[in-house]
Amino acid sequence: MKIVHINCTFNIGSTGKIVAALYDYSLQKGDEAFAIYGIGDINSNENIFKCVPWAVRKLQSLRSRITGYPYGGCIWGTWSAIHILKSIKPDIVHIHCINGYILNIYKLLDYLKKSKIPTVITNHAEFMYTGGCTHAIDCKKWETGCYKCDKISKEHPISYFFDRTEKEWQLLQKAYDGFEKLSICCVSDWVRNRAIRSPFFSKYPVLTVLNGLDTDVFHYIDSSGLKAKLGLQGKRIIVHATPNFYNVIKGGYHVLEIARRFPELEFVIIGSEAKGKIPNNCHFVGPILDQNLLAMYYSMAELCLLTSVRETFSMVCAESLCCGTAVVGFKAGGPETIAIPQYSTFVEQGNDDLLENALKEMLEKHYDKQELSDIAVKKYSKNTMCDNYYKVYYDVFN
Image (tube, rainbow, N blue to C red; front, side, top):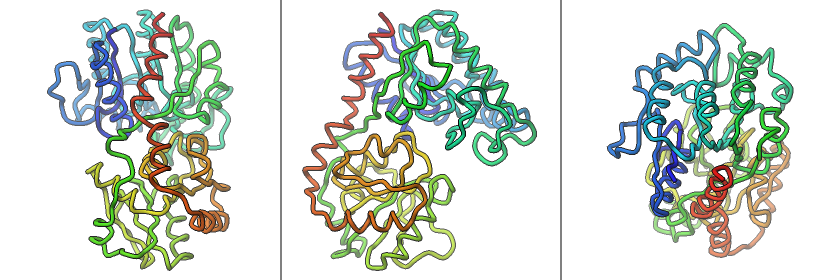
């Protein structure tokens, strides 16, 4: 089979790494693999195509903020992607996250539909069944038709002047209608339970395929050396990882509040730099690009703290569990449905008192980090993910 993946990135970020894993897996099986992406440096591999220059993508971002159409326009990237698809003549096209102003979602779907190319769509977020928003949170307008959105000037994708959500919802509905071979995948049961309520997908199979990660990297590691290097010997450590700590949807202020309530614990915060006054027991270590080092940080901690308002999956949750570290957090959608129950606790969203109690209870439990790691590695292996996607490919192709 010839399989083409389309995503914002390749081998960068969570979805980019998923695409790279699927790409490599196809080659191992003797199939032909290709990837089309729009963000990042040009890849030297002749089967991996960057479809739009950086400057053009930035102009499209500005255009979308003015016109209110974040997934329209994109003439350059759309023409380029369709031209590549025509030259490859794929057996399967797998669409991942394409919300980075790289191409016109509606025109891409329409081309795949009219060309009768078997297509798989993975809902890593919610914009493929809403009027544009990445996370609908508590809004249910997308179930019948978006309109009068109160987030267009506050959250990505931002529109300065116009509310186009009603039109965007209608464009998506039209683009989906009439596909002969289309399968919808969701990264958690929580996302699937929402996606099946969308009228867009009523005629198509909607499945759950959990994200996978590189378990050769993310597994329990003796990190006593790192603990000593950080001067935290003998300390009980809580880890929190996010590149957007101060973004409201990531809930970083809850981490600071919990840190104030547990002065005897040390909170290591990965992915962001500190701003303003923070508790003395909070240690911001910034972004960690070395995945092996990141696995050591997870392994070093006794617990991982999740405070997001909404997550469709949570790679942080899966990475932490693979490294033998239990998870405590707010109910955010995906995490509580993909986590391992005996090693995780999730409480009412935004309730710091319940989060405090859950943290205390989990710290009192005694569990074997290696045993947890072994269970998680089997569940979240990228090979397991790839096997499951291949079952979907065969189904939609046949």
